[in-house]
Length: 288
Length: 283
Image 1 (spheres, helix red, strand yellow):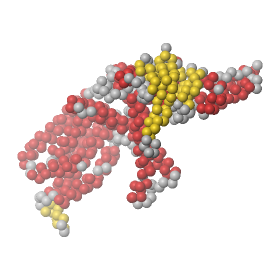
Image 2 (image 1 turned 135 degrees about the horizontal axis):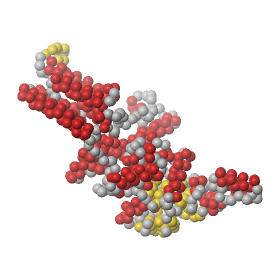
Image 3 (image 1 turned 180 degrees about the horizontal axis):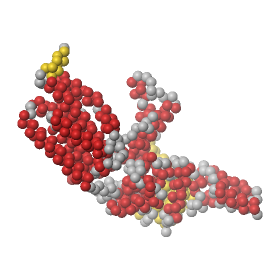
Image 4 (image 1 turned 30 degrees about the vertical axis):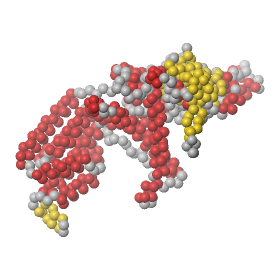
């Protein structure tokens, strides 16, 4: 029943992007996310589209996998488009029906928000599709390292992430086992109303939770037995090395985003207040 | 040389009854035991006999309420010694899934040496030599949850070996495995002992005791007998009292002997018994 659940979306392949250092990929992805909010014209979006197509082509990820992640936010996309169409009241009035008014400005904003959100997801899914969760964890640990100075427990955060990753398959197996055990005793999870179905999950959650504590204790014993102290003298087996790929990619990406920012700077001379409002709107959606 | 010494060791678990009053449930009581360096010692007992409690006392996961546990001359009750003690006593637990800390085999094995602060090139060397010792080198880059139970347990053994301990304790490490997995783990344990490692094997499968130097039988938190495997197997009354079964071949050999055949009492597996029977028949 739960066997088809895969964690993370890593798509194994051998490409330029796959071989890049996870830290560089993560940073460039963040830069892309910021950069996309500085694109305001459709010409700019065309530019980004070309960039993304090149990126996807060089990562050898099938388009289907990327569209799958866009499908995940389809509700959010539709909501954004509808809200922007009906609540933006700039430009010329196109049509009016009862209390609904559609302005051409609304259509523009809706289209731009749609593109912006879609590209955000496409850009970040290129990162998660080409980087294993383990590599991402290491990248986050490595990038957060400077925060150790202000006493942020970077190593512990990374360890929690990596333990979570390693325990998930076991938890899925256990959930599966409990579900089968409860089914064998006549539990019914597939019929009845919503409340009934939710209630039916209580006999799964309780054993899972109890089992989780038992697991945690056994794991703690195993970690202690292997000399875990959480001290700073801990070393690491994995060394992350920058290669020529990372420098080339960074160079291309920086060139690209400098262009985006320069174009934005030229545009902002005649940017209207509405554009400013759009940014706030966009940032809000980002945090959603 | 004695590597581990337990002197009059007792450990009580704290339990609470329905009214919330504290009570003491006995884990182990009055344990005296010495383990020689390089020995292969089996610790057998029924569920609740205290054998797992004893295992946890050996590397300071539990500290005795009374008595002393000394490992390589260090007292486990002294917190300053714990790190050094755990460097010397590796542990492999029962459930292979609950001792994995990373989602890639080589990184899991590296966890111990990373904790010790071993420099990076040496970690790689330790990880690969440990994986080679358990015959799992080709799985280094795989994800452990896709392996069989026996293979996962071999990874757990490699994780303990990478710390380079002097003693390795198998705390019912074969209990959850299928026969194939049990054979894999046991053959690794025997191989390690041959190379000079002190091995403490905790189990309730009597046939696993075969080939050990010494068997410690536990029941109700006490040690009831220490002896060679053949001595333990011969003592049917003791085995029955502590709820353990001798392998069938041993029982059969005893019966054959009682009707006048010249078989040794050492028939721990069917093969040895077969050889003994053939020898009798061709005589």
